[in-house]
Length: 142
Image (cartoon, rainbow, N blue to C red; front, top):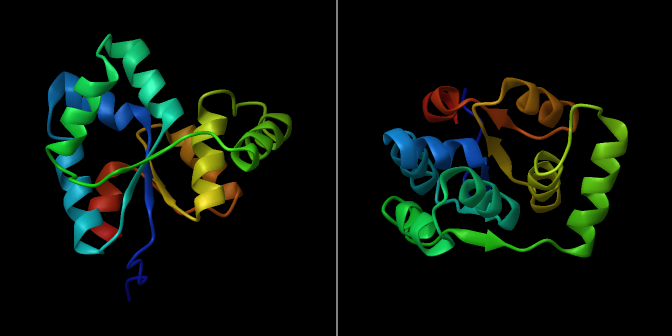
């Protein structure tokens, strides 16, 4: 029996948005699933910064890509709580570094699920009690 995830926000990792910009097809099914569950897509500012750094696109252009599939994403700035949680994660997990620690801290603080292509990142999220999915599993099971 599927878990009832209605209303649970979903943090999308930068690799999802980067793949959408470079190849297409990765964000639409995720956004459809989020909409079906009456949830919200959460985009941490660290995700926008990472996407901008890797693609060279400006924030407005990145948000335009997201808006194609999700009309009302929540962009979230770092808070003191997120920064403190991020620091704890960096200290606890050798493989968890910035910006992943900020993304993971955002998911933890907001009670969000996490979607990423990075399997090691997803394993760390699961150790922290965060629902974490590869995109294909998110679309299939969430």
